[in-house]
Length: 156
Length: 156
DNA sequence: CCTCCAAATGAAAATGATTTTCATTATCTC
DNA sequence: GAGATAATGAAAATCATTTTCATTTGGAGG
Ligand SMILES: [Mn+2]
Ligand SMILES: [Mn+2]
Ligand SMILES: [Zn+2]
Ligand SMILES: [Zn+2]
Picture (tube, rainbow over the protein chains, first blue to last red):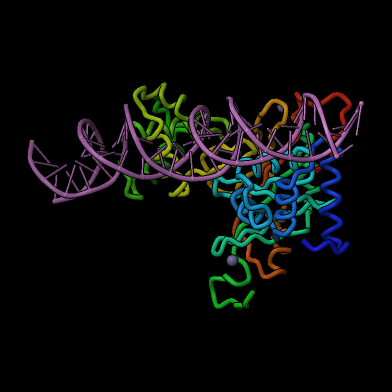
């Protein structure tokens, strides 16, 4: 809620402006959803976004969250992430390069993986006559805190 | 059903035996589901498996298909594939190495991609203290028959 | 400011895939 | 074969997500 001209705040405002210039009206609900999404560390479900956004705009309905998330995705401002539990997660898109996810099978934490070395696979696709335009990659395993054998345990 | 000792038939029998030795009873329904899965070219949904298996055992219920698929996955004989439409697809696992999928955004066809050059990414995960034990990679784009005319598509 | 109307909202109902319940059937062990 | 118990299927329950529809509201144009 701080209007401090920080990078995060500027990104929030920029996305609002994008929504508006895409022909959408700016409502208190959409501000709340967008701000909630911006506060989230990484991908999370509609229910979570709803809970967070409700702290900003309490009478916000879950339906509106779904609709706003859909609009954000449609406008390319957010993207979905699909893990193994059949629920869709959402996150704001980074401006430039995309990222993948490290999903801990023990604690469920989701960390970002910025690296993306898939050029080789994309060529493999091309070689078969398939033109790759997008990909989804999720890595599953155990995070630092959850290493099965005597791993380190750090407080968050 | 043909008892021809072919490779496909041997794989079918082998899987049946695995199910049995895992403590499951062999029923006509499970044979039908397993055979249907074996006939499928690539990953397909429970509804599709049901339709196919019904041709072998007509009074098969969809519920049983779900339960059998779950059992196969639990025993490591089959695996799930998750695409963008929120429905789970199933396919028998190859014995040795895994494969990924080329999903056509135009016609919906799913092709196999045997290559898997993810060692680099797995190391990247390790460097952060994350131990990668599995990954899911799906590539989206346009198959040979669906190449858009002169359209420009860049990786997400 | 004021008006107006399409866009947006939210409560409730609908959907659609998947799961659970429970009474009945069938496999496999003894 | 008999019996224990796993498996089955019809119907009902879940659960995330979407649709419906009556009501509210943003913001373009006056
Ligand atoms: Mn992310
Ligand atoms: Mn496959
Ligand atoms: Zn963890
Ligand atoms: Zn195609």
